[in-house]
Length: 337
Image (cartoon, rainbow, N blue to C red):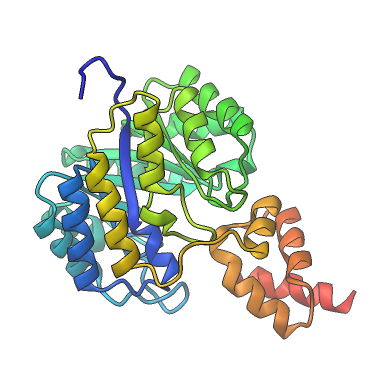
């Protein structure tokens, strides 16, 4: 590709966010097959792991079919050019038990994540990974929930801890392109490090929001093959790369080979292609974490209430990931009203 094209860093979340879509049951064989395909296509970063990241496997949020060590060592073996990335939420992942071994397994890129108002919890993890000479990004989840000024303050904390970029995650698929441009643009103006964006497709805006982020100054975007991810899925990676090529950006990825990789993902990984269901739309409109689709449906049925009412009430109460017990409390109140 021409050197005068603007470079955009693309991170492939197929083997991490996609794990949500199959209850964290991606197999060793599937990891090996997809890593080979993504690496052959030249995808810069391939993210691998439990849907909730390093150390995320548990009875509460779902046990993975493959443990972290096996996932990462297999991925490392099959990624010759692509960098190996992981999602890290302090609390799920500890430095001693999880980060140190991950470094030994050959992880290159550490994405240290927190709820959008809790950047403080990432300090030790970011500083440790930076001290070890690794590439470190800060990730602010559920970023639609707060004003851009507060978001910038939280991002600055991660920047000060040593993160070389800050990624806004649209965990509920709630953003519209105007929202993305407003927040990404504000962060771009107020940070000294790069900005990235991770889209979900609840309102059908995954690609449009990713492009809006780039137009506002983002230098990193996430996607997954066939949109394989939580809820309605992510920005569809092969479409995103195709659109970026059409716009004249350099992703470093071979178009034909990423199309081949997406075909392999559909054949080998994706039991059901992501779809924007009615529940996904309500999840996006209400701003509720995409991963709550299954428990909201189940609990609504148990209490004989409309799951849409439950979603909107959870949205009004600003419930975030990790508060599954509150879903039951809210359902009880709705059923008795």
